Image 1 (tube, helix red, strand yellow):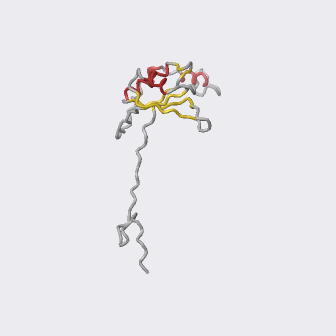
Image 2: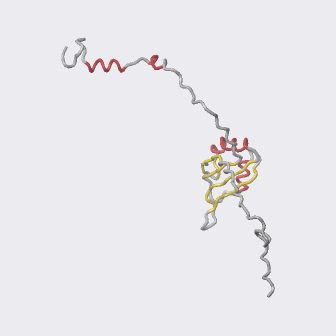
Image 3: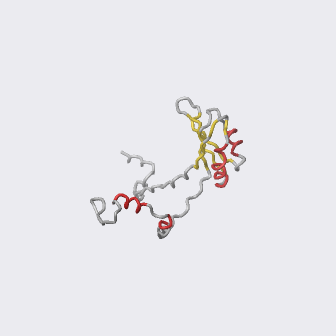
Length: 157
């Protein structure tokens, strides 16, 4: 053999490397299946009853939205987002339904409709994070009546 034929096979090393790269697909199928990670499964997220719909014209009204969304379920409320400077709609509304199934149906079907000639984007509204109320530690009532009591009148002179 020569410099390209280290084993004396009569085949150049570059040709051997190319031939080895052609591995049958069946060999890849013999790999062990992947196992899902074990551990606790997180609880399912509560389904949202509200959706955000954007891409609307500024003149789209709550009556329009209720009309378009009523075929998916009963609409509880529609909140439009307006520009602070002029009060015109930003073309986005949050529609809250009576139940989560209606919101899911709206997310699936409404994007395929056009309102006032415009394509829509529909996304689930995230459920609001729980509000943690911090409890104030009040001082025990003292001789003056405690926290929040009216101030005592000054002693007579």
